[in-house]
Amino acid sequence: MLTAKNLECIRGEHRLFSDVSFSVNPGELMFVGGPNGSGKTSLLRLLCGLSSPDGGEICWNGTNIRELDGEYRRTMTYLGHLGGIKDDLTAIENLRISCALADCEISEDQAMDALGQIGLGGREMLPAKVLSQGQRRRVALARLLVVRSRLWILDEPLTALDVAAVELIKRILEHSLSKGGMVVMTTHQEIVMTAAAVHHLTLS
Amino acid sequence: MIWWIIKRDLLLAMRRRSDVLTTLFFFIRVVSLFPLGVGPEASLLRVMASGVLWVAALLASMLSLGRIFSSDYADGTLEQMLLSPVSLPALVTGKTISHWLVTGVPLVLMAPVLGIQYDLPMEALKVLTLSLLLGTPVLSLIGAIGAALTLGLRGGGVLISILVLPLYIPVLIFGAGAVEASTAGMGSGAHFSILGAFLLVSIVFSPWATAASLRISMG
Image (tube, rainbow over all chains, first blue to last red; front, side):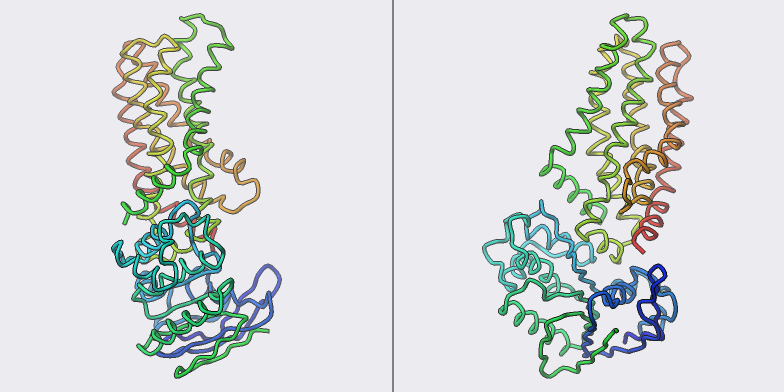
């Protein structure tokens, strides 16, 4: 269970948000909403431990994530809006390396399979620089099919995706949630989840 | 895991050969310019050789430092590395090793050929190559700290040189000194021992310092 208590984030002299508290239980999804610049990405970066909050604390199963360190990072997958896709590597190399970084090495066949599922069949061997924005996004999202982490923190995962891909991502999320996974995500295009507990957190 | 990072970086270097070649050609050009500038006086060139080759190696290695982390930073891979359950110092070690393989090793291999231009005797060429072999990994290891600290800053390239060059000085002194000592017939064992000590100390400390700097820069 992920809990945040009285989180506060200050950028320069500007207070992005303060007193943000919530908890995400197994099987739950939390949408983080709010206008541009309201601190959605900053909040997600706090949750995954890339930066430290200026106030409050974030706990995983009751222990501060700072203390858990590598153990927390093992249970979590973060997908930023940058995606971490290398232009000069092929889709399959990108996927295998990002999985290796998450300490979950996959074979070439598993990677092929995941890319096929995400709708990139036949394009596995193309360098990422010739892929479209949406296809690059799919390469990044293909990681969700192979990782075994329980908490997913996704920053705008649906940008540049077409309707079919959004539907696919929705199914992937539902599958993970039904197995007790947790998802925190920001998005501007609301997706309707069936059979999953959904929270909304709006930053203003 | 380190192996994955090294393999990836070497693959990227293969696909983007111009980055590797610019460093090497910079080194060759700088070293070749000196005989043209100071004239073909063999006794003068022999005296200057080790200093010129070492300074050129320092500058060439510095030229490539900005690239250690910048592309990973720009495309978000660095975020993933910071969030990896694998320890960050281990990942950083992998990146530094591949930086050395891509930029340091070509310099080491090229140095004896360039040394001939300076009329260096066989013995001095051997010492020069060996001193570069011990010294260039230290340059990569120290440079990685500077590269991590200046990550994402405007004008980071100039800042790296200001931060890192003073730390390169001891390596330069003992690296170039090894060749001079061997030419003077004093034996270069002491210089090699000190260079080796620099290497061991930087292998132990640099990955931690680089990892801490990355966390500061990305926080």
